[in-house]
Length: 350
Ligand SMILES: Nc1nc2c(ncn2[C@@H]2O[C@H](COP(=O)(O)OP(=O)(O)OP(=O)(O)O)[C@@H](O)[C@H]2O)c(=O)[nH]1
Image (tube, rainbow, N blue to C red; front, side, top):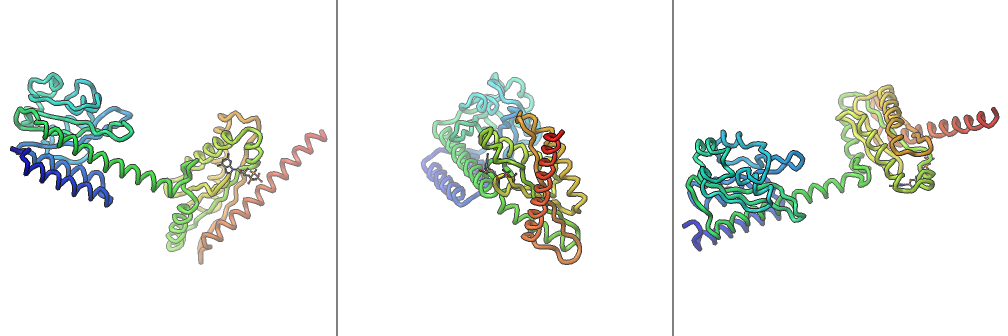
C-alpha cells in the first residue's frame, strides 16, 4: 500500500528536502518537477500534471513537462476553465478539489472520453494551487491508469504538494518584486538611476569597442513645481507617469531610459548620432503634446532636452556624457524660457 507508514515517512523527508531547496532559492518550476516525481511514487501507474492559469484568457497551460502522453497534453493545452471542464478546469474554476473516479462515466469528462481512453487514463484527482492572497495559480493533478478514488492520506499528500509548490511560486514572485523594486523607479516603472548608469556604462563600453556612436539625453519638464503647486501632487505624478510612458514608447529595444529623480529623465541611445537623438526628441515632443491633453491641464506643458554624443576616438566617460547633456539641457531650457518671455512681451505690447 502506497500510503503505508514507511511511505509517509519517506514522503515527509522528501518534502522537507524540497522545502530546504525552496529556502535556498530553487526555481519554482524545478520544485514542481520534483513534487510531481514525489507524488507519482505514491502508487505505480500514476502520472502528475501541473497546469498554470492564464488569468486574462481563463485558460490552462502546462507549467512543467510531465509524463502524460503527448497527444493528450496537446489536446488539453490552452483549455478554458469551467465548472464542468474535466478535473483541472473545474478545480481551478471552483477553487476546490475535484475527483473523478472513472473518466469514462464522470460527466465532466464527457467531451474527453476518447482522448483519455487513447492515453490509458482512467481516473483523475485535481487540487487547485492557491496563493496566500486567494488567487488560484493553477492545478496539481494526479492521473491513474486504473479507476480509483484517493485515500484520505493520498489526498492529503496531493494537497500538501500543491501547497509546497505555491510557497515556491510566492517566493519567486516576491523575489521578482524585490529585484524590480531595487532596479526601478516606483512611480513610473522606469529604470532607476543606479541601474541605468550600470547599463549605460555597459552600452558605452560595447559601442566604444566597435567605434559606434552613442547619444545621452537629459530631459527635464518645464515649470513642474508650478504644476504641483497649482494643481496638486497627484496630477504632478500623473504627468511624470505620462512623460515616462512617452519616453519609453519611442525607444528601440537597445535603448534605455530612467527617471533620474524629480522631473529629470535620462535616455541612452545605442549606435545613435546627435541627429538621430534629435529625431527621437522631436518624436517624443509630438507624442507628448498629443497625450498630455488627456490630463486636461489648463496650461501648456513643455520639456527641455540636452544631448551629448560620443563617437570615434576615445569615448567620453558616462559621467562626462551626463554632465554635458545636463549643461546642454540647461542652455535649451534658458532659451525656451527667454522665448516664452519674449512672446509674453510681444503679446503685451501688441
Ligand atoms: N508630483 C511629484 N513631484 C515631485 C516628485 N519628485 C519631485 N517632485 C517635485 O518636482 C519639482 C521640481 O522642481 P524644479 O526642479 O524646480 O523644476 P521646475 O519647476 O520644472 O523648474 P524648471 O525646470 O526650471 O522649469 C519640485 O517641486 C519637487 O518637489 C514626485 O515624485 N511627484
